[in-house]
Amino acid sequence: MPVETVTNVLGQVSAYQNSKMADTTDSEELAKLGNSVLQATETLVTALVKPTLTQSNNNINTSATEVRVFAVGQHTTLKKPLQLNTPDALLDIDLIAISEHNEGKAAVSLMTYNNMAEMLKPSLFRSENNTVNTMMSTVVSASLPKTTNKTLTKPVNFTLKHISKWDPEGNLSCVYWNISEWIEDGCSIENSNSSYTVCSCVHLSTFALIMQTKPHDSNHLLELMNKIAVPIGLVFLFLSMLTFALFWRNSRVSNTARLNLCISLLLAHLLFLLTQHFLHYIKPHERVCAVFAGILHFLFLSAFVWMFIEAILLFITVKNLSKIRSKQKEVVHWGFLLVIGYVISLAVVSVSVGVMPDGYGSEKCWIKMDRGFIWSFLGPVCFILAINLVLFIAVITTLRRTLMNMNREVSQLRSTRTMLFKALAQFVILGCPWILGFFTHISENMEIVFLFFNSQQGTFIFLVHCVLNEEVRKQYRKWWLTLWHCHK
Image 1: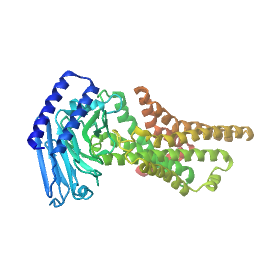
Image 2: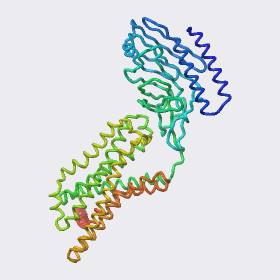
Image 3: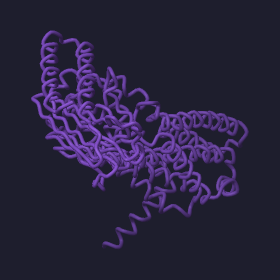
Image 4: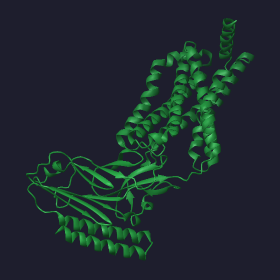
């Protein structure tokens, strides 16, 4: 079909489209109209492709549509991947590799639609509640007309020009049209800035770029706590870590667990704080965002594993009140604890990456909530919290039995009551803040409570294991007196 004929028919399709759009505002009817326009345009573009021994191209520009068609034959001089471009989009595709699977012949078309977003609305993309969807690019279609084997040898890249204001706090998604809705499957963001976004896709279809943003009704109390409470918790985590490191030789096994618990929590909270602070710089780089999410997954899981190890050591301690240190050293070596503490977390993250490699990199650079991938974190967390609860009950039962059987000496009673208090405090420190995390979706007040207790884990650890530890207090006083005399 001649180019002039296709151009005229495309004009008629555009006029029909405009008349129908004026008669309805129903999303379903507009989506059906959009499907009809897409199908008609693709049929017309297919009619442009003619057999060629070398190569040929056709360009069509109308008020509603931009069309680019390129075909190659067995004697083409094209030797490198092809680029097709319109004013709002650029397509990178290895057409030669595709032609090698089609007896040396292949064709590709690129179409951009200036007003298709009015029919295939961004609201038809399923996103989180309370988010606003904005179409960030023109709607783009790509196909392989009159090409028998349409299998892509490698992903294709679309560079899409932003047509709406870019929000650095928004979440960009490369999506394709699937009859009645926009979906993400098979597409990912390769690179992005304030003007353009590069999408990589493993199939050809109709594509667009959609940004999800949340209303800026931020809770000032939540922001204030995030700026004050989290750094305070980090300071006390560091002090706890420093204390356990200095007391390494005094109780190597128990300090191994507590020291690494503090290290994991310190790094996790610090990385999360920095990630959220610089989110508008990190989020456009999808791979960097996913890597940070994976590291956070590993660090928080490691913290839970060390919580679990600490609970086991506490149980062993209570079971052997008369010979605490000697029994602990017989049961487990501190070096073996290091292996357990980090290898388990690394194994969980590795399996998660293998099962669902695109599960990392949500709008907050954390684990994505869709397709149940969040359970790669919540599953181990629930298991460890449940086991910690069982161990805590066992500790209380064992302590009660010990109190009944031991001699009623004041020192023994005081020591055992201190142990009981630490057991209670330990469970609250390690379990309750994370249990609250399951209910943060209920209200912002619950989110504030969760943030406070979770951010102050380091403070609680410092109070229980350092300030309330008589041996540590004596050592602090000794260091303080030494420093005081040195400065005199």
